[in-house]
Length: 139
Image 1 (cartoon, rainbow, N blue to C red):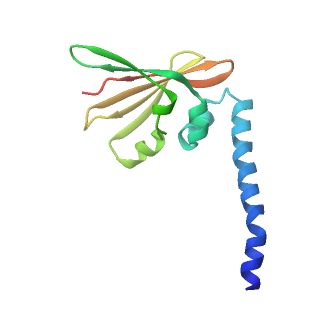
Image 2: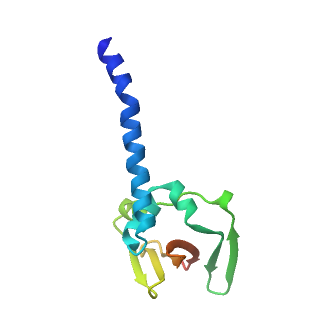
């Protein structure tokens, strides 16, 4: 019984420590936006951070052989997407970051087996990275 009481006493300290670590990581990213890799890891991992770093309404373009369809995704329709996790789930999945200039990145998710090719375009706005559009060129 004493052990349970002691563990209950310590629980808030562990939660507070974890919360401080989470907040510290986000603050570090916000204060050092030149490091796209750190930003992207947090963007994939943290759903709240991801939501705050998407320019809504988000333009999504689906390119088909004969046509090009555009739609806008509103914030309440967005679902957290962890591209790094998707990459790890299947050996044919690839994730590549292409520099499009100092303030623009194209993170390309591909799976040659299924024909998936999806571009996630990020732009630096006011010294912070944001997802600004998605282009789906899947077969």
